[in-house]
Length: 291
Image (tube, rainbow, N blue to C red; front, side):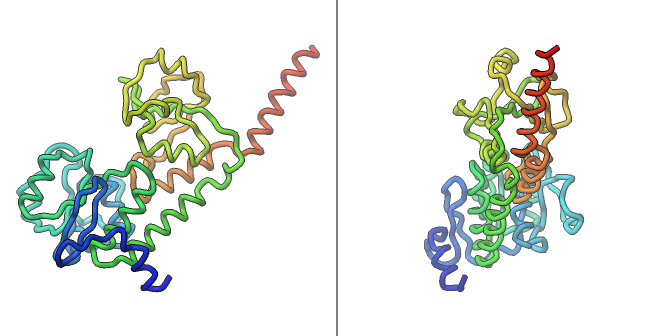
């Protein structure tokens, strides 16, 4: 793609409110910078992954505490990923951009940062395409729209290719177990539903217009899932159903979730193996009748 065509493709993401650079974050709020960001703080692991996907390791002055980061940013200072922000420490770092998690960070802390003159980009992906959009917008805010567009294109292409082996597989009804006590899962308003759909899985609580939600064991039994997906190595709430442990990357709405999606689709049966299982079950029933 020529630079002219790339500029045309990115024009809808840009705002021309005065001099400098402006984009709209995931909540629709304008994020304005006088010049490209060179000192960046991230306040959640998925926000860090967005910047790493853009190759902006050297611009990170602090990141949300997490143990799964690549070794190349081992020396970057860590900030608490949960609870109130260490406001004074962040001010001392003199960031020109903070990439926050809208529903995971305290709104009062984020407003305080803005009042202190620090631009805040609120990330809140409700669908997988929002991740690609954020890569493009953060590319603009850091002065390299082309890099943002390329990272978004790689992410979209990887998503399309992650589950090709499942293209003709029969759909399965699944229970996504976030936590056993109290029983937690996700309703239809969560980006993980799109992950499941790409793997040809159907969330048994996808008809509920909610995000994270508590359920009863009675409700779970009545919905009768075929498979339980675990987000942590805990005891399944339905021990008589087959279960799979999801890769940890599927717990964060960042570019690395493709790795977890690819692994999930490898671990699920393809059309041929599911057909073979049905044939074997049919032969067993026929054999039992003949006895």
